[in-house]
Amino acid sequence: MTIERLDEQLGRLRFRPCGSQDLSTSGWIARLPEGPLVHSVGGQWLIALGIEKRLLPSSVVKQVAAERAEEIEQQQGFKPGRKQIKEIREAVTQELLPRAFTSRRRVFAWIDPEAGWLVVDASSRKAADGVVEALHKALDELPLKLLNTRRSPAAAMTEWLVANEAPIGFTIDQDCELRSITEEKSAVRYVRHALDGKEVQEHIVGGKQASKLALTFDDRLSIILNDKLELKRLQFLDIVKEAAGGDGKDAEEQFDSDFALMTAELRRFIPAMIEALGGEEPTV
Image 1 (cartoon, rainbow, N blue to C red):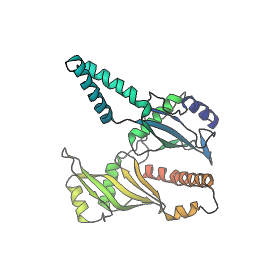
Image 2 (tube, rainbow, N blue to C red):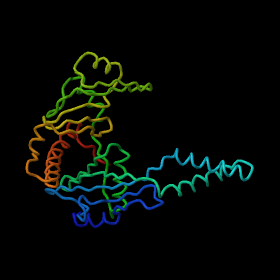
Image 3 (tube, rainbow, N blue to C red):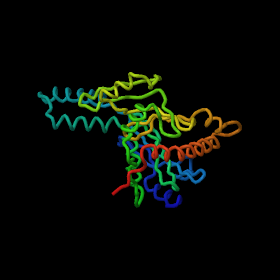
Image 4 (cartoon, rainbow, N blue to C red):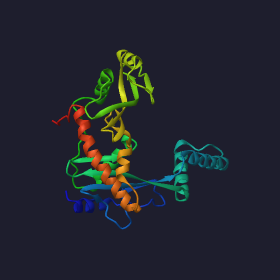
């Protein structure tokens, strides 16, 4: 797909603010006002899903509805039934929605058209799924598949801890979480703690597996890998930040510089991580 075609198809689901009766809306939003929906730097693409929600707590609706129900009870001499209570709450929601404040956020996604990656910058799987769902709605076709590796992250991370040796290019840091593989689901967390001692080994011998592990790649970026193959707390180290610079650049130049540097680093990191986990599992 060309960048022009992608931009055109994303335009089918362009972001619009909440209407008076909308609890939430979502759609694709441009990086810059009046700019294209696909922001391109060095052949790498950036898109953003705009999400707006009305802040109407259920406790507020419940309280106002209860007051209305009490008034109706006094008028008709008996308590409203379930159906009437439901209608009261719906009416209260419609009445309060236009006056509710809204919050707006963006979820960014990076597309590497050469290597074939879609990487979503989201704090949860649910938020990432929202981006994928919006892409499905906007595009004629979306040949996506979730990345699976030949080795499970949990088994690989546990092996690295047992051997006290990370795969080539990586080093083990000082944060991890060990979870029991039995029904008890007990967990032990280490934060800024040496992981090469007997204590960690004993937990593993006792039936625990690594569910999270902090790693550094090539002395340039640090991450926490979890057993769902998600990357958490990704941070670029000083050597990368120095390369990004900042002197004499305006905000947009700095954004493009940061994006170019980020994608360059992740294009090295992602294949190395997949190789460390035994390579990609081919789909049948």
